[in-house]
Image (cartoon, rainbow, N blue to C red):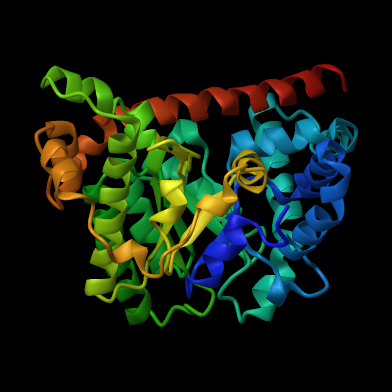
Length: 399
């Protein structure tokens, strides 16, 4: 095992790039232990040094992880990672709030998970002068079409800690929420975003919110805006291959990755060209596909040189650390600015599902809620949230 993993090497040639942990920070130590347990004996010391560099509460300014993305489903995983501890927390909440129902218990428990995780990143938040060390706490995924509910939830989450950033979905209603929160100086992470019109809409919503905030002399010293592009959820979950097949076009696995990267690169350049304060966030990353007999990681390789956020779930980090062909991955400076191959783009532009996603005005705001990737992702997130509600219900019944 090499001393530095591929993620560390990517950051070295990418000024301004931030790596975020895509899970609750409370599971980090257990995850490290499990990774060490399954590692080859000769790799464990090197692996431990990598883990020490990822999160270092004693020297937060030097650590690899610069922030965190979470949501209710990921918070459920944190609870499942240490059931005795969280059962004790649940008992405390029930004792403090007699007569509460399962939905209220779920919400209070979720906020406790956000609190504990954001506490872990407060040292980095303070060390960087409030520029990094944010933890994204998401509004209830089941509320993505309810503006008033999202605002109420967002204001509650924002009070948990100064380094809590609110994850707001890219639904029609979500952009009104982002504008409102920005006007109050509250940081936002625009999630459930897949297409260029959503990404541009976020920049416009933030711009209007900032104008209002400045008029009202709102403190913006702890404000940030990141825009998430859920890459493989656009290409795989959204059904790009199926839409291509309708036009008689067969896409390779690499064509699908190129489609996702085309949208991300165009959004990245849009922010640069217009000198916008938002920062792109890359998520839903995948290892692969195999090209000319070599396994590639285009979701990382094509981001080289980008001043962006890359959020990595534990499973992806595991794959990258244990990637058997690391010597064949060489990051090229400023690769983010290179165009997608012309023959691929010509093929993709014949698919309306992609053509519209790639155009700034390809979708109206009224159409976001019907996009396949948004609908399917929302369904998955809502189902996982219901599982956390069920956990709360079981705790109530056993109290």
